[in-house]
Image 1 (cartoon, rainbow, N blue to C red):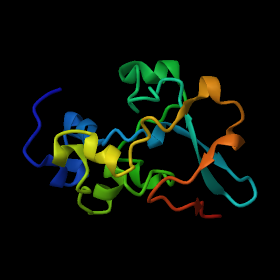
Image 2: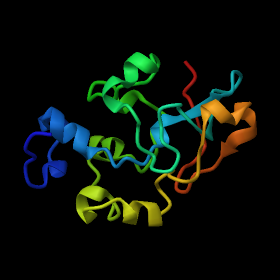
Image 3: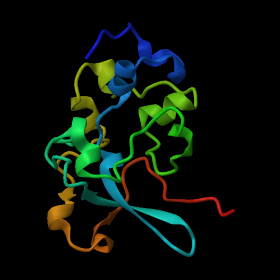
Length: 155
């Protein structure tokens, strides 16, 4: 990773370098979990079922660099779409900074490690099952701390 400017996370998202953008991620793993959408209401239900590349014990992608080759529908979060992804967790650094909010006290950029994030119940490490072992997603619906169920806007 290239050099990171001091307190780069306080800058507007469009001022970040690619390395700074990548470093902003807290690594919670929530965006790598399967979601279910109700066809009638548009409501999204979160599950504890992880993408096959997510390590359930660490909440880290086992092949981040080549994830799109192995999981074609893996979404690469960019500045252009960060405000349009309705299922990003309320705790997501990209979502918070896009709204002009500061990083939470537990964020690894502020603490220097991932332990505070785990203690705050934000990380999915140790709380998920791989899609390779899960079975039906309907059996794995969860409510994550700090997350509200939401409905997509109907147009």
